Figure (cartoon, rainbow, N blue to C red):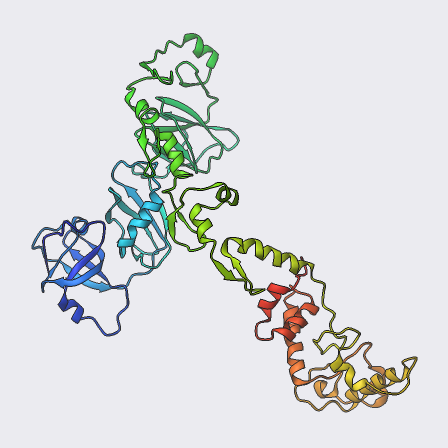
Length: 512
């Protein structure tokens, strides 16, 4: 297949134009999205499809895809339809100098919406900066449609991420050090700053001594400088800024003279003052219109900039956070989240409409109500799951009812004894019965004299088939050890279709 001249108007995407003959050659049942592998002598890349309007026997590529293939006009390429796994992780290495004050993760995630697939080693141009796909998971080529990917920015000078004490490097993870001693970072060169984990230390001087509290974090140098880790007992000279061991001896002999002194902030340094002025005193504009120097704008873009893109906790979309008012700051939400959270949704427990931003507090109210609920009083019959005001529920106590005068309860005890004896001697005759005090369930009949010796201390009456199934379900739930048998009986009685959900929503656990 031949290549058409690159479409200069199409950039920042991997979607190509294919001929209609390829569309006609697709099977009836095809997996979407359509992903094709383009191969030539110089390499290969995976792409998506914009439309099937190219002349037969040709393919029209965006500029970026042609550069990845290193192909010229009229060069023949091979096209193959493939199915790629969903991507989970991607690491990008910038090829150009980039502004670290920009929220690159948000910018890249927005730009990747126009891509269908990524290939390891592929060069992509996003937000005016070129990046190389350094690493992909779970394969060397993945689909990025309808998937959540972890994005990692790899320092463009870093090859081996492990650094040793005394090694001058652009950054990495420190290994082979003495954990009992503090670690000092000696910053050399006109750097914008040094990031240790998630914290950035601004160091624009020629040499700067920083103390690293957590040595397991990754070190990244921003700007053209470098960093060296040391575990010697160093102190920073207040005159020349050099890290030295014997500060008193060094201070007596220090003859350092600054090449420049800033007239605006009185800071001194060596080399050129241009870098210092660019970082500290050049006013630049944010996209929201706020003016400030490089350091102030870096903090602004990472915190309260209205144009900062955040993922809304309610709609799950990346939106501008907007201008926060006092109520937004007090609730810890962006202005967009405060407005988006004004929509209502029915509570799963009480079915009342609740604002999305209040759902968490509303759920805590139900949680407190759940913890304060008393343990339900279950029927004393070991085969029953109903609630009971007295010892037995109405269903179990009904067959024992009598109109005879019984002030001392002796006649009631006699009826209970006779019912237990009948179960032990002849059984109930029900195939579903699982009563341990019933001849039908045990399969063994007893004489009246023997049965009299095996009478239960409480109540063990045979029940209906539906009740027996509920009790069996309650016993299985209680065997899990998370809830008391009383709560398990209530769950089996009220929600036999999904008792676990009812327990998690209504019942108190044993360790609550």
